[in-house]
Length: 172
Image (cartoon, rainbow, N blue to C red):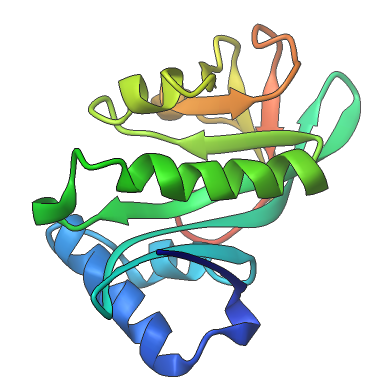
């Protein structure tokens, strides 16, 4: 079963279970900042027999492209418990998040690992081919280390410059 709810509607125990799940999925490499980035938006939670086995969230960000600030649904904190992978849970989670993006945002975006990129590509997400930058307190700064890892969903020329809004931790 997939549950969809805003952060504010989730009990503390559910958020704690989601954090624990993601800590396990990402082998302890999920930072407090990474978790913080996944809060304040809509969560998709996969439950099996009362256990949380998958999580993803979409939060609002502003990405700049072609002189416009695009209201963007940015996907964060997607993970499925190792023993439940390859059963369609990730696709079900993303299906819910993509519905939120389609109904509430101009664009979808996410950062993906090399291993995850084929999964997202199979769902219509496209790798951003142009330069990536971040709007920081010190001005617009190139983020070349992220090139090839940012994917978008929506009708947009993926060869121009894409600039993300500022946030602490990993900006993309």
